Length: 254
Image (cartoon, rainbow, N blue to C red; front, side, top):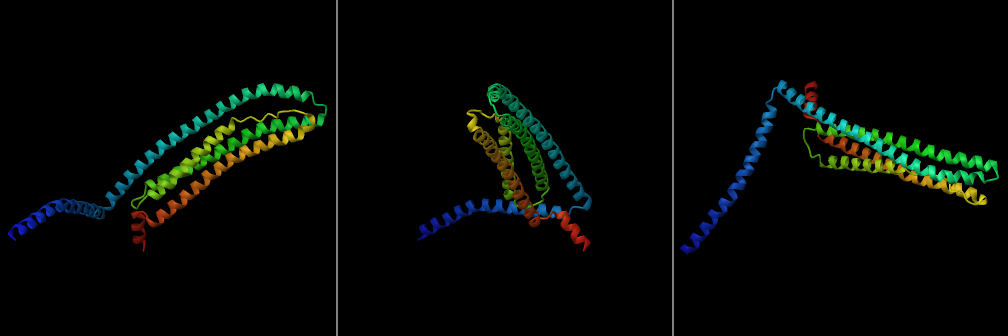
């Protein structure tokens, strides 16, 4: 009986040694959190303003760095698009010589004029639309930058949902940018054949252009929608986690 009591006492002591460090660590963490909260509450308005100013300066520096990076990225995109267009131009020059030769063989002058006009407009529209889409993506990226600034100024709350939404928007923008770059290098030279089939050939080329451009426009819309969704999630986050200073100011004005 005494032996059993001794074994039981030993087990209890071992258990207490194992549990004590965990309990102590938990108590230490709780104490630290309480001390931090107390320290924040006991800060003078001047100290809180200084802390807020320091944080805002840090956010500003991060924003400036990001803006420079985004500016460089846009320049790289424009360079890549110009490269694609130069490559497309070289390809078109080769194909256009054959196109002109076949065009001269056509007897109907009205048809010749229509084909030339469509051929020219396809190249112009491809460049104009891809330029506009790139401009839309630049503005969307700017909106995402501002959302990240707002999130960086948050003083509490779980930001994981907002972080995920913003990351999704960034990926959607990057995907759309790749689609725009690829589209900018596409060429649409009408492949002339039998004059009797000229109408269907032109319509097929125009249809291909519209189909290709539709894919790119859809990608840009997806980037816009993902950004709007991120903005909605951010708005809900800030509504649930208003800045402490704003809350204090509201209480003071009551």
